[in-house]
Length: 248
Image (cartoon, rainbow, N blue to C red; front, side):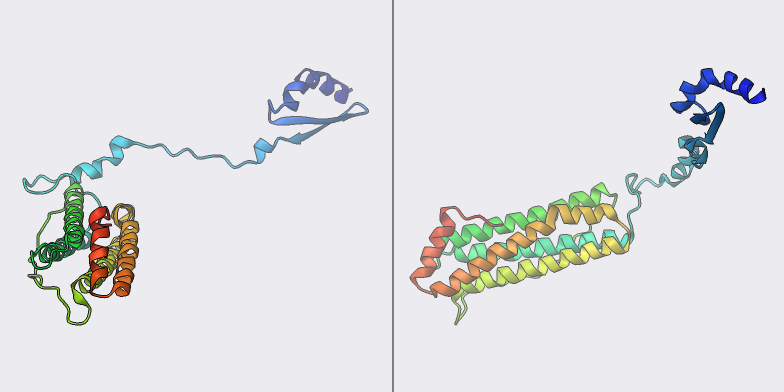
């Protein structure tokens, strides 16, 4: 009698229970017997919703806003080692640009007159200076302070007794590009050591791939100049640069 009554009471709810509308689901009916299992929802752990309270959490940031007139307002999670490493890299880029500019001046001389090499090294100098300016802009963006260092005077004569001037200058350029790449990798390491994901991303996205391409291109130029010797082949190589090759 009691089972029949329970069945008659639950029968209108059966469709809703079968479709997950309640805590219990109707599984089967056999000979007037009702078999019910706990819903799978009941077995799931309760989800604790974390409430974000911006006005409470921002209080600690408000306390960190500088009140000193000369302090940066933009600086946030930017360590002193990263700031110093950026300034060191600015100095590297400017020094390399300075050397390339000296090479441009040498090949532009009237008694050297290799206009293609002069053009190539002038463009390379401009590019390295642009790299220095990129790092300066980034330093200011992060709230650091740009400190420019001194630079050594580059040599003014690139004529080598065995290699000639074109090959010697290009080998020197290759060495400079590899040195710059090492400095960039060291900068990336400083960013990693100080958990500065933004600086690491900046170095990766703006410089590392381009630096590898530069090393490859100048390596090819060195290989070509080693083949042509120091005579007429250098003039042909120079004409190739003058016709459209650009610094990379």
